[in-house]
Amino acid sequence: MRYSSAESEYLVSLLKSAIKQEPMPAPPDCIDWEGLVALSKKQQVYSIIAAVLQPSSLPEKQSEELLAYTRSELLRLLSMKSELEALEDELEKQNIKFMLLKGSVIRDYYPQQKMRQMSDIDILYDYTRRDDLIKIMKSRGFRLTATCENSDDFFKEPFYTFEWHRQLFFEEAEFCPHFDLWVNALPDSDNPCKYHIESTEHFVYTICHMFKHYATNGCGIRFLCDIYVLMNFGPNIDMQKALSRLEEIGIKDFASDAIALSEAVFDNKEATQKQQEMLDFLLSSGVYGNHIVDYSKKLSQYSGSKVKYFFRRFFPEKKKMKAEYRQLEKKPYLLPVFYIIRLFTKFRYNSKSAKNEFKQVIKTENKH
Image 1 (cartoon, rainbow, N blue to C red):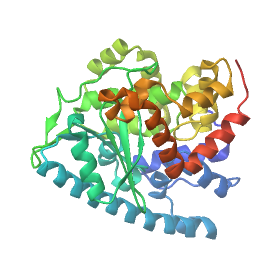
Image 2 (cartoon, one colour; image 1 turned 60 degrees about the horizontal axis):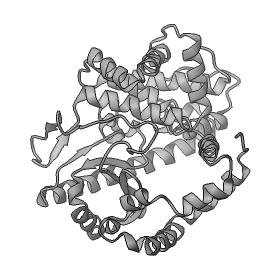
Image 3 (cartoon, rainbow, N blue to C red; image 1 turned 45 degrees about the vertical axis):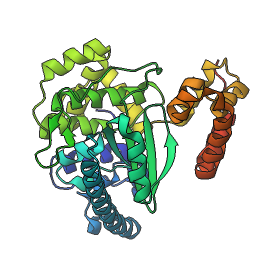
């Protein structure tokens, strides 16, 4: 494989050593430790390389940072796990079925759970019980910070974040593969309301999740780590069935390249030029890509007009508003009122994010 910098090459070698439980590789003489740490955090894989880095081998600043991070991340992991267990008990009491998704499933297959960094816990649940779920979350001190087309986000200080999904992809989105995970879900042996995603469907979903980000504003190398871990350390995957399903969805070529690239990176197999370009793109992106790319694509939908873009951000289409505020299904005449409520809520709880988006869109080059 070819790498653009010593830091990106060494990062990949550290990821490989951590996932395959091999000793820490010797760093090149020219390594920029500060740059390496910054890159690993941008890619959200610092927890992975932290498992193999030896503090005694690092400069003092990075050694102290590693020790502090390891302690704080362990505390966060244990706290989130405890909160999840409490929520699972509440869901069982209320007879609300649910299923863990994404990182909260994949982390169980890493050599250590703490290696798989997560910003939140994603859960699919019986959406007909949304009102009951909101009551449960509020009773535990959470506030509803965002309602998207296919999920509700809840947050509680200092770092508890849960994303509750009613569906995996938004129907109006350009890429929206259909999944009915409940059909083949495996019931939990202890909690009758808890279900486990079937391994082959989970693998297909992981590839689709990667493609969604890759095709919009990009994604990072952590997706490759997840793919490799699922194929080599997770439950058995029916790869023929998975590729057939991915072909139906229309992304088999992308999936084949992602799978082959994960094997090239972690098993030293040959990579094609196309796969090399994919790796370059992954390493140049953040874990979920570059929002500037996403903003540029969204602007093109409005003929490059930033005024139209901001108008739609302030006043979403009626279908999106109904997804956020269920009251509008029975009382559509209240739409203007809920536009005001939405603006107040967004700026009250997400003012920093909103200001950042405004600045980034203003700076985004119009390529229409």
